[in-house]
Length: 101
Image 1 (cartoon, rainbow, N blue to C red):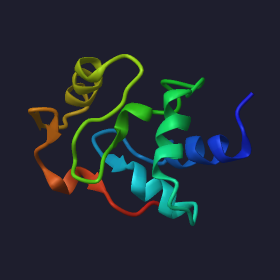
Image 2: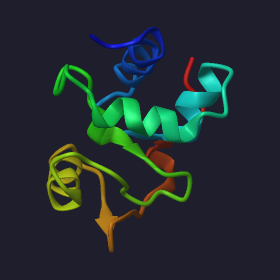
Image 3: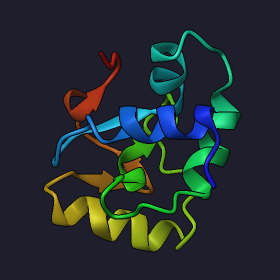
C-alpha cells in the first residue's frame, strides 16, 4: 500500500503530459520538500504504471536515471512520445518541465 508521500508523488507525476518530462527535484519542490531521492524511490515502487508515467521523470541535468525496466526501455518509451535523447540525456531542454503545479 503506497504511503501518503508516494501517492502525492504519483499525483504530481500524472500531470506531466506526453512529450514532456520533469525532474525528481521539480516533483519534490511541488511537495515543499527536498527529498529528491525519496521521490525517485517512490517512482521506483510505482504500482500504477503506465497510468502514472514515471518514465517521464529525469534528473536535474536532463539525464535518464533510475527506471525499474532499465534505461534502454525508458529511452524507448520517451522516444515514442517524441522526446529526443542522446547518450541517455534529453537533448531539447524545452521538453523539461521545471515547475509542477
